[in-house]
Structure formats: structure tokens, C-alpha cells
Image (cartoon, rainbow, N blue to C red):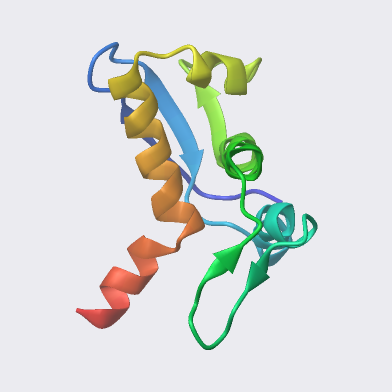
Length: 113
């Protein structure tokens, strides 16, 4: 399926990052599954979360980066390692853009304003 993409430039290294503009339901399930398949427990009354680990967070973030980032400087190879090897400021910029997609913030913000 062809999907719309957008590009942005990292603040320090000026790398061109191409990302998808939305997740599909299947992709959202994959990311959520990282937590749910690892016995994460959420208390509905208190909203406390039990069983979350740093490893789960890393796996979910890597999966989101893998799904959403299409290319870095027009290259589609070894994307995760390229992102992880970026300077922190550039890494954070990529994660911020990916979080906008995974959390559907762009849509939510437009909907509420």
C-alpha cells in the first residue's frame, strides 16, 4: 500500500529523514503488543502499571522507528542502527516525530482545536 510520507531535517547533522504520516491498525497492534505480550498489568482503578521494563520500552521504540522511518538521507538500509548512532539531539528529534505518529498527536491536536 502506498502511503503519504513527509520529510524533516535533523537539527545538528542536517540529515533528511523520511517518515510515514500515519500508522495502520495492524502496525499500532504490533507496537502495543510489545507491552501486552510481556504480561504488563494495568490497574484500571489506580492507573498503576506493573511489569514494565526498560527492555520493553526499547523494543517498542525500535519497532515504531522501524515501521515509521522510511529512509535516512534517501537510504533505506540499517535505519535502526543509524538512528541509534545519531547524536542525542538528532536522535531525540527523530523520536519526537515518530511519537507524533504513534500517539496520533497530530490528528488529536487538530481535532480538539
